[in-house]
Image 1 (cartoon, helix red, strand yellow):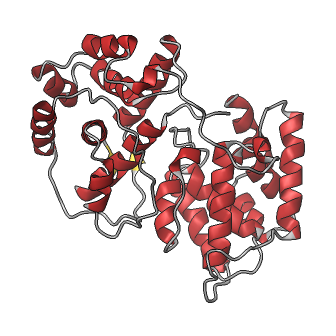
Image 2 (image 1 turned 180 degrees about the vertical axis):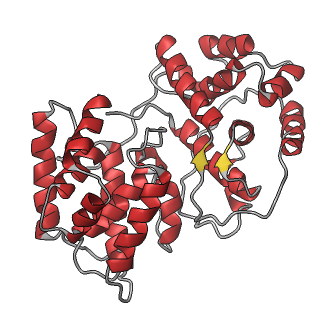
Image 3 (image 1 turned 90 degrees about the vertical axis):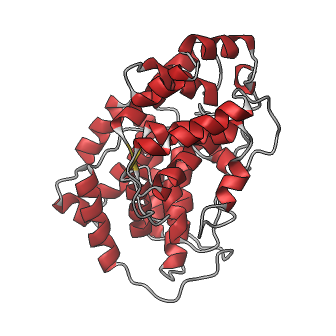
Length: 343
């Protein structure tokens, strides 16, 4: 699996989440995406991060490569000024609070991916997302753009002519982990492995246990990888190695919160460990990884995905964390069925 979203598009997604939090929203809306698109287009990503309070400086890495902006500076300022009027601002949400994508935002991402494929481009870029926003002409955000003279046809023309958009030119694939076995794991699975290490360290555990991975699997399943970074002081990640594409969650939001609370309540917690300390995997977790690899082969799938890991863990009778999942009605069989339906 390679990244479908370009580094610039990933920065837009990250910034949209932070913008939604600034206005106290319960979900990331299309207006947040547009605001993030404009800011990134005007090369304002780094400044926008510096304006957000209590954001770890290492939480995201800015793409410092210059690009030709699509919006004129005056138009960009006018559009940004018009967007706050669409929402009732309230108290800003904490950075660590989980914010999901609204249904309209999910549809924008789905359409952007489809548009990228239709145009035979390698990566989804910011203007693919902008064109997808304009697909829904009845939306208030699209109407604001229309009044400003921004049309879907005009955006697509820029995409095709490679003007104001580096995306139409295939870019080098983001670097992957130097580990020779890295290709065994999808980017989403590597996100889970990263979170598992951080959870173990935060709980003061000298080994990464199955239950730490279960916490990581729940957070990643709910699309909360970036939000989870705020749980760990001083931890950042290179966004060029992330898979930030929206995905269908296996667990409902209510079920995920319930499972997370029950597992965290039973996890022992001592003094957090230093961030750079090497933590080995427990024997139980190693067994789960081996079983996930076997399951991947049985399903004839290319890489080990989070669903393979979860199925492997839930099928292990010796894990108390897996028992919590089984008590909640989550079985190995329905996880495998979900994995098969996604291929």
